[in-house]
Image (cartoon, rainbow, N blue to C red; front, side):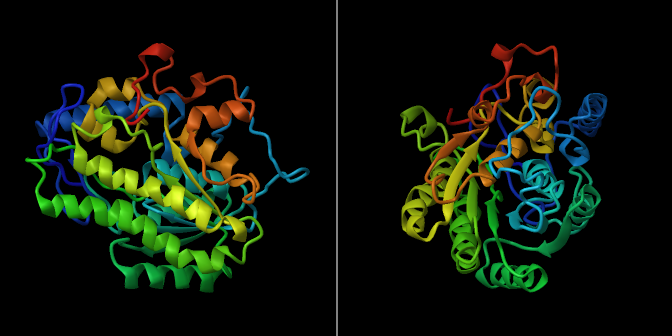
Length: 348
């Protein structure tokens, strides 16, 4: 990841985040502060058993998800998921949740060497998928390049025989204002967020068409067209909403073929390494939920009928309420944090 000076939100500046292969450096206040924050997150997550990289049972007592496939204990068993940006964080949590059913998971991401400040590579993620009960394929993939994505899709089909699910998770963020956002970083966001989502969907569609219950799920927000979501960071909002516009258009385009296209977005900030190290530090992590809540919501969506569940802009908490979940305290990083103090995510 790369951090550069950017716009303002909640009193925070320097909020430009890019995948590690674009720039393997993170500008923090000091090495001492970075180490302190990493130690805090490690202790907090280890104590609660909630860190996405060590998921053992995301659905805890009082929040067991219903399977919409009657009689199927492992509805994703044998299904193939192609997921971008899954070497860590939310993407990895979704991959592991599917792996617990025995799914095949293609980890399409850019990190091939361990980053000194951010854990996880495509190979470590693939290993965790195998340990969780799934089959894995580590793919070095930069979604900006058509030939690279095409090759990764073909390798997935060659290895697993097809593709049933596409998760468009890869994303870049830069919260700079219009005048401060240079066009190189503007282009980077749009190349990864909007163009990457469109490209992966385009290339996976021929194989999804052959699946019994095909799903495309974009990690993108509802199309909330209020000025407050645009004016602080027009470039980022345009890039992120581009992913959501793919949902709106492709849901209609592929509806008759039974390919579901939906969006999923968290109600609160999610405790990832990026949030801990780059966005809000200890205080924001304490006011966040773990990646497991997004993974559980994604799992519920992917087990719904693709012919009836399409064109939706889902919020993680609302999905899980529909599935009968009533206890959301299990997803808090800090169990002492009051619900009203949880930090809301962008666009909600």
